[in-house]
Length: 65
Image (tube, rainbow, N blue to C red; front, side):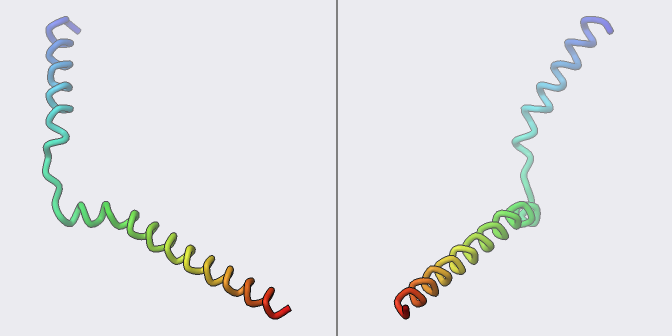
């Protein structure tokens, strides 16, 4: 490959990379992207609630002894 072709290819790659962040994302794509985070948040809050219930149950058992 000639030097001109290498330089042109490199310049094209740099321009393409610079434009990549400016592409608008649709609302549907944003919602789909947020879904895994919402699922993880939901599961972790449910686990936290169940752990609190378990601690409460352990305390009742100790108080009854």
